[in-house]
Amino acid sequence: MKFYLDLFLTFAKVGGLTFGGGYAMLPILQRDVVEKKGWVTMEDVTDYYALGQCTPGIIAVNTSVFIGHHLRKIPGGIVAALGVVFPSFVVITLIAAFLANFDQLPVVRHALAGINAVVVALIASSVVKLGKTTLKNAPSLCVFLGVLILGELAGLLGLPENTPAGTVLNFLSNPAVLVVLAGIVGWLLFRSRNRTKEGNG
Amino acid sequence: MDPFLLIRLYFEFFKTGLFSIGGGMATIPFLQHMGESTGWFTNQQLTTMIAVSESTPGPLGINMATYVGFETGGIPGSLAATLGVITPGIIIILIIASFLNKFRNNRNVEAVFSGLRPASTALIVSAGLTVAASIFFTSNNLSPDSFPAVRWPTLILAVAAFSAMQWTPLKKLHPICYIAAAAVIGIMFQF
Image (cartoon, rainbow over all chains, first blue to last red; front, top):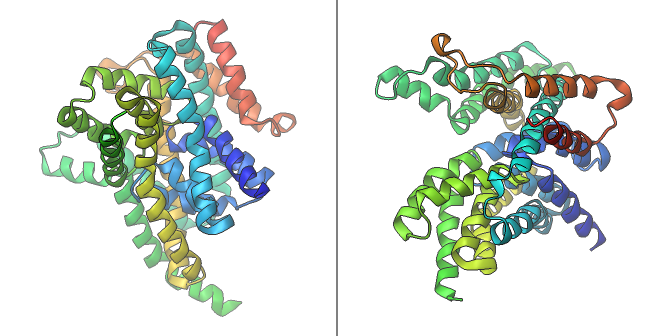
């Protein structure tokens, strides 16, 4: 029971410190769940994060369910999910009830502009740490660059959606599509590689 | 409190959670459709709700569900909507996770994950770039003829924070310290 309380509170902290989408929770996960608690490895988090992107639902919740399940099966997954949504529930309910013009308050806008700048720095810092484990060899680097370029190309070229090239690029820039493609490419690239590694060992 | 409203809220958000793949922003088209078909909120109200959800802690998709639920049915409504939007993900992930445990050491599964890890890293970089572009420049349009002005204060703060994070004595500092300091700096210097 004490463990579930710890699980709930840890994920409540993650949820309460996430400003933005699911990617913004990465630095907090890295610090609290990986480094401090040692519940999962950073590689596990990356796997869960990838799967969380191509499955239905909210990425932050999906990633939390994976970690909770890893620790305590189904009850663990549910407790982690409830933990991560708890702060939103409290904060939004309070704001909706008492501060209808919350987003217009100058103090909120200024604070948020500062917070967003630091969130970008936190993500960059997490990515530097993450890259050391996920981008160790040439094929990994190719997949990384391929996904990054395909993901950004549609936006950078700004092709109209009604042209064939624009339609294809827009389809490819969808994170869920990119994750599935990367899985297939990974299977093709690393299948034989892992086999040779096993043969040598 | 009308129990039918709560059940409808739960199922409308269950559908949103089931069909939106790729995070909070992906729920917005579904919410627009929900507002139009149920009359629970107008597009104008939705815009406000998105702005508030973006300015408060917590995952965007959850904040949106809680907000819409509260506006429609008070606290029971926000509970129904939040639980509705997370239920499909929880069920699907629990199923995938239990399969994953069984096949984790399979060579083919391991090969697929070897491709997913760099892809996942790239998607995080990509998301970071999108946020960076929206907060460091005054316009999202990056074409040369309308090259947007740089918001120097936020850019300098981000670079300073990043440098501090790489500096060994500060590496142990919890992200919350940076977030709190940034809020204070933002207010003091009127970002």
